[in-house]
Image (cartoon, rainbow, N blue to C red; front, side, top):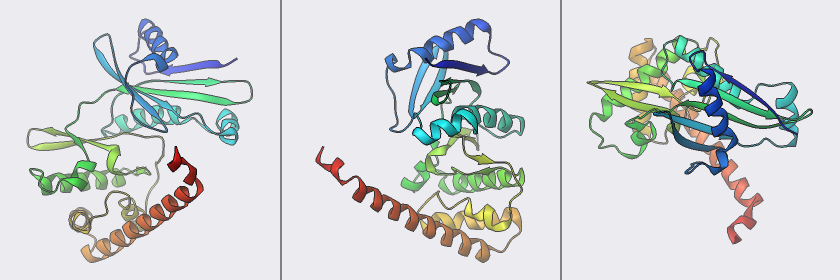
Length: 256
């Protein structure tokens, strides 16, 4: 039998928590859903659009690790979101998280946040180079990343789909999502620049980001670009190598 644990932010009432609990218990029956490993559904509860993320049930080893030694992805997402907001870093408002465990094993977990209606994600910048105000958006994103580094925030999943972008007048606001992998530590130059390696395959984007980061940091542009492009190529090589091994290992899926 699974034991249920739930934690919410201080603004959630007892009645609202009961409603959230019902949503979680009936998650599979809720309409919609995106994602393969983790399933995300957007639901309306009392006029508020909520983003509910159901994390994939971990493998046998991780069931034991998450049960006794490590915080769940849902708990980390919730706690990191609260910490980011206190540090004036954009992220959708955290509402609650739920965990289901047995005596010896961790089972499933859910993270609930307010659903943010954004204009685009960073991914749009990697596919549409004719986007209005393109250069300014990319430079503003670079300044946002620099501000994270200055606040000792190393967002380990700093990838194209994990930053939401919202236009506010002539300015742009950035919001981090998929928060369960973060470190709050001081970073050296190499670690800061490596943080850009998962964002794009396009050298032109790396050039712009390197130029803006040089303006923010006072570091030499060539030093930044050489390292950023080198780390980008290194990541892409590793990524495609891993993808190749997966295709060979799971070749049988192509026949289904």
